[in-house]
Length: 154
Length: 126
Image (spheres, rainbow over the protein chains, first blue to last red):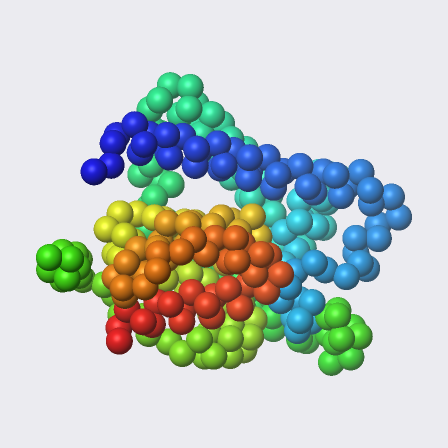
């Protein structure tokens, strides 16, 4: 038998993990921004395992750079790296605010939206369509040798 | 007595069938440039939730895991810590915690972590 105390404790723990994860998501690009004096991020090897292996971008490739340029105030560049970059910042801030409020008040808010299957699938379809279009442009804009150069096999 | 409890557990919730050869997860994942892994995350989350009879991995987490590294790590943490032990319980295997292995693999080679999870899920349908 599982006690309700255990469930509450697990839920609170998960919320703390969620807050930590959102803070890391916001903090890492900021630290990269501080260390991006000569814009070396644009030419550095990506740390995405998929990009390193194949040279092609994964659905999430460019989000970190998008966040870095968003912090820098270059919205156009931010959106060109990943259209969902600014959305990630908004989502992370919302997550921190909602989860902190939930921990303090011991109530749950926006569960209808956070666990909405319809919203999640809409986002997945949008992401898939965006990634597909991005891949077409990527192949059109890059030669084979340029794609290989973006992987670790250069 | 133990087997009757197991049978009772097995008959409680219908488990969605998602049986794919782990090699095909690798092939589809590479061919679709990672798009297949978003679909895979959603289907695996459905299986895990049915096996655990509670929402272990929510749909938003499953979808975001396909495009955001920290969420992907969280996905494999939940899979290894809470979902896979329930799968092992159903298949009658040792209920070991695979979270460390899956987090490390998820960080460096997510497709390999997906292949391991798929291999374990496939045993549900044997």
